Image (cartoon, rainbow, N blue to C red; front, side, top):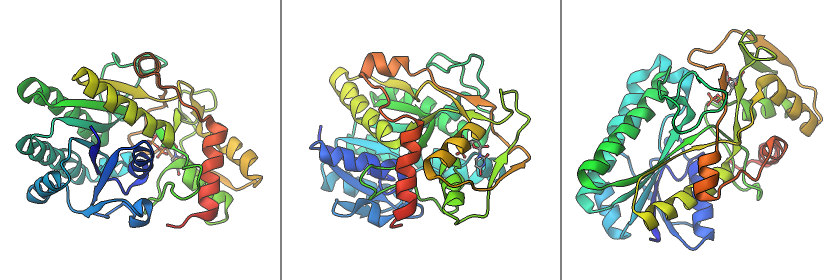
Length: 324
Ligand code: UDP
């Protein structure tokens, strides 16, 4: 299975996965409407501009490139925004995916790799979240991703569609080449915002909440490098195809860092003592989200290769020299 349609392939995690797929002998075809993605992120690779909701166009592209599997990255991803504008999230993250799955079904494409999220779990009931942890999202973003996971289970039972759902914890860092990295407008993610403060592009970093039930009162997250995520996609795709079965994995490092700890590490990496301001909590944020990645390790042989310092170092390298 070599011909992979990467929907949202011009975005952050998509573009890193596309680059890795191409370097390993796959033929990735990027399908992106460029509403959030960047054409420069996938220079030199087959590119089709199109919408997830355009079934006719999707089916043409499946046929033109003899697509065998789809990787789906084209989602809205901001927890805070999803609380304020849930309709936008249900349309893009659920209704459009249903359209994509229908297009696959009608075209005989039987393999799907889905970007899910730690946000499908809600408030953790145990320190590290494994695949058996209850899925009770506390924000619309998590709800939309869980709905698609449920859809995929039903599509497997009824139509034999095989899927991988990868629940990312906090995707972060940038490619070592410095050619691609994280670029959202507006940027809402912690590491790029922290590094923009270090670069003098922002006056300060605002910490959302210092009264959480965590050791220093700030939220704890599990940061996982984007290239480690990209590698997991390929490993999971290969296992799904080989065993012809649907799979679910939680992808994180297994270690949590608080917002305050991350800021300290960023100050050490950049050598800049940027300003930090403490603000109110952001709606929809659980206090702690840390993965138990042992299933991915046991079944895929996957283990993150980048630690927090390397994540921040690659992201800093990108921030200083970014092209888009
Ligand atoms: N955060 C923060 N200030 C910011 C952006 C994020 O304190 O400007 C916090 C946020 O509340 C969360 C953590 O950093 O606890 C990671 O947030 P991010 O948006 O990067 O990822 P998420 O966990 O929402 O996927």
